[in-house]
Length: 257
Ligand code: 13P
Image 1 (spheres, rainbow, N blue to C red):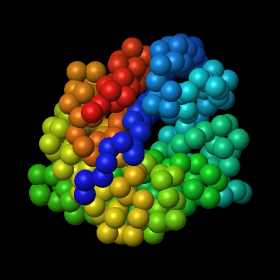
Image 2 (image 1 turned 135 degrees about the vertical axis):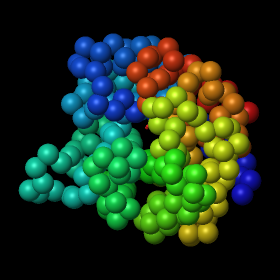
Image 3 (image 1 turned 180 degrees about the vertical axis):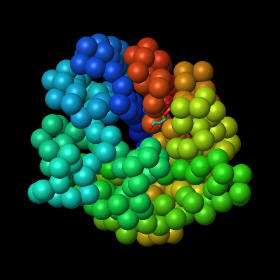
């Protein structure tokens, strides 16, 4: 499905995961804020929950958005340890990641739970960044498209009414934190498949949705990855912890052709 690139603005989100402390968060926010002045709307950060208020204080009005790494599937109530979508809105979050592979594999998030979290995020006014991707075993078994189809089909019903207020992230599990990156052709093939699957699942906004690639994105490979027609930006782990690297990746996305 070739959709005109111009409709989709570049987006690069930094997923800090569970790294750092208040001092390093403060330094990283300052670095990103200072360096992203010429990149309005391109960069976003997803710090750990305890630093979201710090992100709000440091990034307000900067053109850099912030969001969470996860959200509760529940609305409110006796759910010890959970953080609701409404709380994230109170903290000024634009985004929340949903269904990151680390949540799926380490914490048991199922497709059904990803749907519930996506529903909560949308109901509260957050933009869900729904993460999908196959493991190495699944890729080697030739099951990449089947896995992506299962993950995408699950969320299509809740994304149908979201218009362009959602983002998808393709993160092959075998490329996360491993130094292995999907080749630009592999990323493009997966992104094109995801976009087409969304469309066939009734998500009419699919041509305008931003699809981010994640998995060992670095300044050295970002230009080529973001040059692919269906790769609209990135979801960055390790490299987002170094402001200069993250900004360099943001510039690669902003300048993509
Ligand atoms: P790395 O960039 O460290 O591979 O992590 C990718 C990721 O999981 C982002 O959500």
